[in-house]
Amino acid sequence: MRELGPDLSLTRGGDGHGPSHAPLWRRAASARARDLAWTTLSPPLLDVVPGAALARWPAGTLEAWQHWLEGADPATLPATIDELADGHAAFSADADLDPANRSLRLGRHAERLLHFALRHMQGLSLLAANVPVRRASRHGVRTLGELDFVWRDLASGAVVHWEMAAKFYLMAAGGHQPPRAQDFVGPNLVDRLGDKLGHIVHRQLPLGHTSEARAALGHTVDRSEVYLLGWLFYRDGQVPAGLDTLGIAPDHLHGWWSTLDAWAARAAARPGLRWCRLPRTGWLSGALVPEAGTADAGTLHGLLAQRFADPGHDRGWRRESPVMLCELEPAGPQAPGWWRECSRGFVVPPGWQERALARTEEPPRAGAPAGQEDA
Image 1 (cartoon, one colour):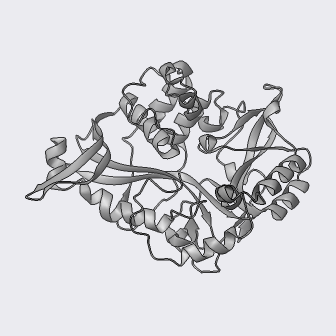
Image 2 (spheres, one colour; image 1 turned 45 degrees about the horizontal axis):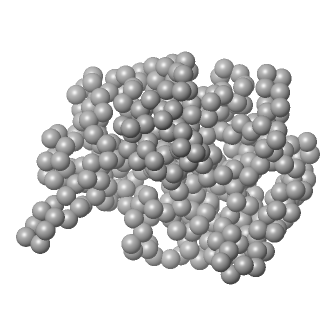
Image 3 (spheres, one colour; image 1 turned 120 degrees about the vertical axis):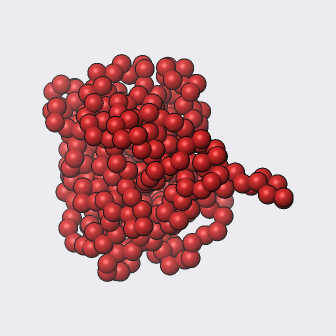
């Protein structure tokens, strides 16, 4: 087991105004550019998916895409969730064409960003997105599911079907060795990594090879692949051994989760840093926060303690939901008054770990469709 240092949750990254070698999803000044870069350029969660293939880009596509994105005017990029909530979606040149444009859900936002990228990248041609696949019978028409993205590799001519998900899982350490995919649970305990992978591999990917899909697309799919990205979080930053047995990529993005007292001890050991609550709308890319949006650990501790003790009978969700915090350091002389993310993690309320451990032992829940869980 190894421990995350202050910056190890972002080892592939730099700061919002940092050196040119830092990933664009961390150093871009625009939140639009950071989120779009994260969706297309951040490392995947997995390097192996049993029973399925991981997404593969055409040769040279990502290099050309990053070069284009480096110089793109943020006004031409998809709006952030916060801008959509504020009614600023018109700032995006392609607002009317992107799927689920008005959705404020994080998973739909990531899907919208990938849709934009696939329409603008070199080396491929987007054929379809969010395609419902239906089967007719004497009892009527039944929807079998939906194909997220279908595109053509212009060099090989291959038609590729992608199922995409952006996920955030906390490992509820139960002492299992090697770790199990079901040990990774969503913050609200609805979703689990094992269930998500099972749904993608056994239900979503095969859908692209059905006769109904061929009829809906007008194309035959040559290969179906998993496009899975996101963050994993470990108890107090302790990363267990054996993650490779699950196919978890060694360079996956990861953070920590802690109880309120354990987080307070963590914060006390890092004097001089600032903190902020990271809203769900900011969960994708690296955070860049003005000083006015930061707080000291003592202030946040008081707010979290009050939240977790909220006696209101209609506030159970506040008491029981983990809160993501972002640890911040000065962004540097090129960005005075701004603070950059150096780690992120969840502070969990009393009783959450016990509920999480119980959740890892439950059978898959029926009636919880993929995409409707914790993101």
